[in-house]
Amino acid sequence: MSLSLKILQREAITYLIGTIADCGNTLSKTMLQTVDLNEGTCFTIIPASTSEDHLYKFKTGGLMMEQQGTKMTPISVEITPTVKRIIELFLNISENYCAVSEDILTYANEIGKQRDERWSYLVLGGEVYLFNSHEDDATKVVANLRASNAMYYSFFALLSLDTAQQKRLNQAKTYLNKEDIALLATSVQGIVQAAYDGESYLIWDRDGTLLRLAEEQIKQLESSGQ
Image (cartoon, rainbow, N blue to C red; front, top):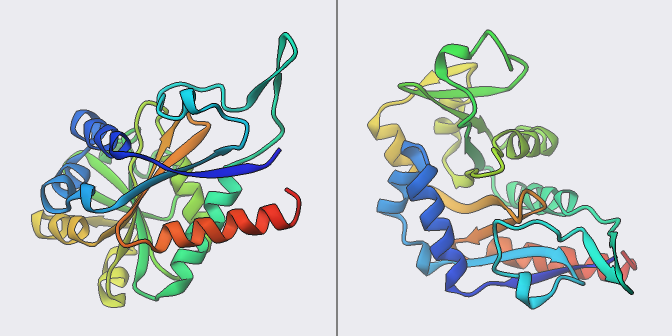
């Protein structure tokens, strides 16, 4: 079963803004105040068999099923590996590119008691963020993409920060202040948010880079018959 890239209308950006406003932590809400998401592009990667009627049902799963006669049958396709590759290619473009995500399932006082296999924690009050520098392996970055997914909400952002700032943040535990949050918020280049009941993602792209990489990946999959 092949995958399809769909550029979404403004309704998708409205949905992103709404979920962040309702569920986000300080970082994502600060970003809404400093970055105009309407100036970017939102797209998704879904099975090619997905109906247009399902495209904007961002909270609804079922992408991995298709109608065959009178029955619904499972689709054997994975979307996360393609998104992982897009993230990996993005990070390889510049040493300034890195990632941060909101871990809304963990509280600051839990660090060290559980999930201590994670890489770099950023802490603001009781809020926890997961940070990946440009030097981190893509597998670790995508692990944080999935770890930050609470099904009902997730916020994974790709950033552009100079290497000195990345080194400062890429510690076992770093306490943030308001200036740090402002810096991270204004540095957002892309957002990957879980959608369709966790079966795929909405990807917001600030300047067209992520969209270009995604289009190239879909073309490669098509040429290889996947």
